[in-house]
Length: 343
Image 1 (spheres, helix red, strand yellow):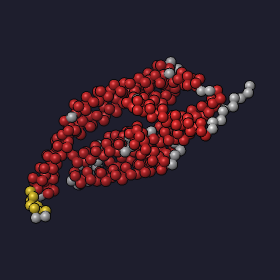
Image 2 (cartoon, rainbow, N blue to C red; image 1 turned 90 degrees about the vertical axis):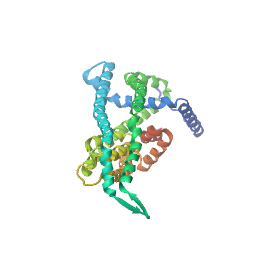
Image 3 (cartoon, helix red, strand yellow; image 1 turned 135 degrees about the horizontal axis):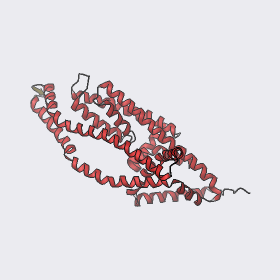
Image 4 (cartoon, rainbow, N blue to C red; image 1 turned 60 degrees about the vertical axis):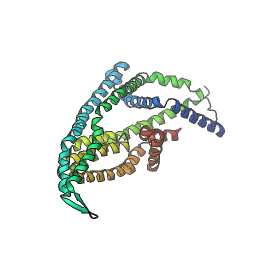
């Protein structure tokens, strides 16, 4: 049987195809921008769960639909367990703010003392402390007072969560049929290229997710160790939260810093004899150093090495991904660049 010969594309044809693909991608982004994010998340979830379903199907000999259901039940149990640990912790911390503002006012008043003079202007330390606490209350009140609005937004977001779960469920269940259907669309002369691309791109994304899990574990250990070292209250839960937020580079760092700074200001250190406001500055300083280490060393090396990209390319990709696609672009910048390089 004579082997089919792949037709050769001229440079002009390649340019035209690339431009048409870019034009189509821009059109889809503009027309379906609200749906693209959830669909991408559904594909990522299906991609992560696919190996577990295959392993259960081989080991237990269950029909595929029951294997998929079993994996999703385990996923819901794990997510539910994490939420039962994290949400009460966050709620308790927000509730403690009201109880500790009076202590904070006393600390500021003791720090400032009585009356003092600045540029020939005499100020009463107690009045200054009162104004500082009032300002802090005004800052925290929207966060505490809008809890109902926040819960309403979470409930409305459940529609998208259900959409993502349903789409990912059918992607995992019917993955073989979908793969066979796509393969039938490939011209016979290009089947060998299609198989090579599928294997190489699949290995890139598998390595990326393994690298992301490793990075989250490293960050979890580092933040927990730093928390215990400086006396950050609830160091272990904060370390776990920091590891989970590592899936949102830069943005996750900001969220963790706000939580840790408020915790430091309200509770203080567990063993360092510093005023709460001074300990908050220590936490901010430590986190700034950690953030620079994470962005410039850990992420480029762990993620870049897993997708075979240089650290500089990963950093530039994160910046470009944030500008083009927000949070999702930041998370998927490295594997997307590696995929484009293969193509």
